[in-house]
Image (cartoon, rainbow over all chains, first blue to last red):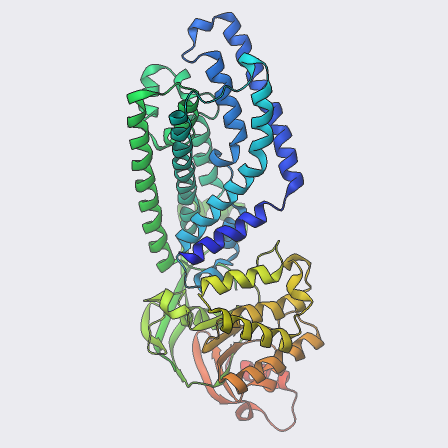
Length: 267
Length: 262
């Protein structure tokens, strides 16, 4: 366990090194969030009753999404892992007394965490001080906030275990390009990154909510903005836990299988 | 002790001729060719021995190193390293070996070298006192003092290679595999690396297996050489066996390669 923690620490420290990148990230996310809110303002002005979430809830959803972008964006993968597979540098990692899957998992979580910590506070702070419907509302209760934190961690772990599948599959396909494009665009659309899931037509939404994509950002962001509350929380959280177990289980075993039969590339 | 017995390994390689027409044809029908990377390879290496594993490009040197370090499973044959089959229990096996791949890097690119070392300390669960001892010794012998605080990306190749070698020895392995450790190094760095390997073998009785194209490496370091070509072992003996009089070592080896038609 200690070794994986150590990986976590090093990757975390590395992520904290890039101050300018974080600064640029904050600006981008802030402008992006503001633009989205402007678009939704126009929609809600036309007919506020036509939407499944209140404007305040939507604005909160967007600000939280921008603040914790690094947690949930599937395209946010570790180039170094792909490089190590493509170039054969992975040979070194296979020469260590560690499980590749666990190591990469620790690494990915650390990377996302370090990026989010550098970026989230300025965005949250500004969003909290924006005037009423455009800014972020405070959590409705302490329980609500705790549930938000717990499901956010679960969502982060599901996102990472999903990305792990892409890394592991790269062992077999050699080039990650195709896999990445397919997986990333699926996540982007089905996870509620483009528009929140409640905005989808009911029939489609019911199916989407069962998929692993809905177990990522969808749950915590909707819990915080009180779109999900009471007994309705149980099912999505149970799904989060189920998907986490399924995805890590498949990924871990696939990785063990790949380790046995990989052919390293390059001299 | 390392033994390899009748080890075979083959790769499947897709081949096609040049040109657009051929590329279209290969969409539907792909021709594979089986390359015999290792063909009935057997040898024994005793503890504390220093062995040069030489052969032309594509002879199967790296495949052998990869099998011995547990990251490649052969098609057939048996192999034990200190009583263990490398690929069966990879994690147990790699605790006792150190590997340096001259063409790859194990240090983290963006952080100072010492951070990578600390990570290795945790990965191998090296006790504090042993880590300190080893680090101090390596630091002195490989002249790393200034380098350890520098990020890897700002090191020259020679400096990096010295750090790579140190990184592979922090956990005091019994066996060290060196896959082209002097590739691309200048004269001074080469001499430093050679001298270090000699001392390591003398003082710690570390078994060293070295692959290289640099015959001076072999001349300076090893008494025993194993010559491979086209996946077969052609010669297992000493440099003196192939050397005639005062002939230049590179020419001698080229002559040997030609005589075996490899």
